[in-house]
Length: 168
Image (cartoon, rainbow, N blue to C red; front, side, top):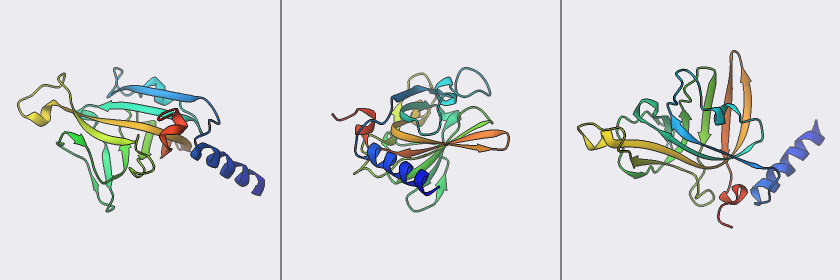
C-alpha cells in the first residue's frame, strides 16, 4: 500500500513538473449536448488519471453550480462577460444523471490556463444582454474517476498548462 502511495505521489509530481506521463485527451463541446439525458462522448470516455484539456461551452440551461473562494455556492442566473473571479470549484451538469462532474479550477498564478468565463453567444438570443451569454470552462486537469451507486463521478483537479502542452 505504501509503495502504491509513493508511486502515485511521484506520478503526480511528474505531471506537476510539466513532464508528460501519458497522452493528453481533449474534450470540447456544448452542454447540454444533442442527446437528451446523455453526457458528451468525450466526458464518458475519461478514465482515472487521464490528463485532459477541457473546453466546454455551457448554455444557460446547463450553467454550473459554482463554489466561490469564500465557500459559498451559487447557480448564476446571469453573468457579466469576461472571466469569473473567485471561483474555487464548479459542478458541471453533464446532461446525464449517471455521470457527475466536479472541477476545481486552481489559482490563477499556478493554473492560468484554467478558468470559467462568461462569453457572448449569438445562438442563444433573447431580449436582455445576459440572454446572449454562455459559460465556458477551459483548462488542463487530471481526472479522478470515482464509482458511486448507479453512477460515476469525475473529479477534475487542476494541472499547470504545461502538462497539456500549453505555454511551451
